[in-house]
Length: 295
Length: 328
Image (cartoon, helix red, strand yellow):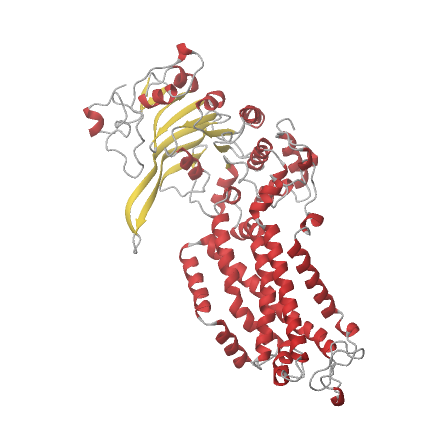
């Protein structure tokens, strides 16, 4: 092209869309992704990596502590903690994934519509989100679970109710600025329908914050699930939830701290993994950094 | 292009008394406390294969005129006619027809292209939206248009950030041309570009006009650019056209004092060409409080009493030019 301005040699001819190797130079992203991926793999292959039947009690060997037989020791009924943890990861992760996906979808659609149309539609939708934000989240979650009863889906639904508002607010604000962009105006001038503008023009450009919120939200959802189990509102025993192990272990914590420590550490590491992943994604998806990198 | 049964010499686009007013709202109850009269009764015609330059200072309403014609800002009043037929309600099918005949090219080539879409998707969107061509033919139509605006076919999978400003503007022009519109509003299409690239884009617009018979409403504050590309020039001041004539007539012999001011403020290398015109360079009055009578009287060296009392109508002079001035 004749009107191509000369570019530095390094910047020309870069046709790769995803900069995979470079993106992992971000330390928190690398660590977060590693932790998350490992836990995901453990959860998926839980039946294979579990060493014992997770229901099998062994009262003489209760609170055994880590040993060659039980790598993380046993709980108050002598059940193998490692096996229960990896199965528990399935519960925690599936609740978190369901809750986060559904909240992100609901919140994003509400935010897109609210931000794009403005006016009374915006006013109405934002007042509805305010109503949801007005309740203390813990009370709301407990109320929903108390009404619907415990269970994997019900816990997830209660988490959706408290977390979709965050996506709605963030997406609304990015939509507000994106809708003034010339390419959105150009799409309007071309006669594009509003769903097309929302999903083809605006949504792809607001994915960055949504992805960041979602990965941080996974960590939060796991904490919520554990908190509910801790309070006795989660999946009822003998489901191997992390929160139940943590809370039940506190009864013996003075003499036998292993049970609580191990379950708590599992929660902590998982949440840490998601948070690091979210932070890392925020760094590399930051639009300012993107323009600096791409010029 | 649309089936053409109209007089070939008639204007393809006629704008009559276009007004765009924005309410200023204040306070808890959003009471309207004033009105910005951004465009205040603008009328002009554009012929087939004709370029009309629209010039004026920033804030005079030239861009708003373009946005209103492109359907991006709602017009408060006024008629828009294609081939003499009034465009009906701007809804549904009428609106879709209107969009096909009128397109826009934006000033900023960086924000006018979606950074997440490949060039071929950007250019294909107009075809998809209006259902032009069979889906299987659309990729070829995209490549044809890319060639026409001077882009290589192998660039079709690239993203906007991989292009220079001039190339991006070519993509923007190609997108506007995909629907084969009758008129393209060019809203300062070259003012964000380097001077050398400006010339290329202007020549591209000229070539495209010769090939496709498209008309341009060319909005710019750069008189040099307008002189280069326009057949007719309209000068706007505070929402109104104050002078409109053929390019030669405007540049050789400006009649309205404001036109004269604009031309005299263009720097010239030739000292003999430098004009000396004493006019107040004070700030432009705000579009919220346009002076009564002639809007330009606060800065005009020729202003007299009648200018305060009456707004001068746009009237025909020498059979060719329209001027809105009491004293010229």
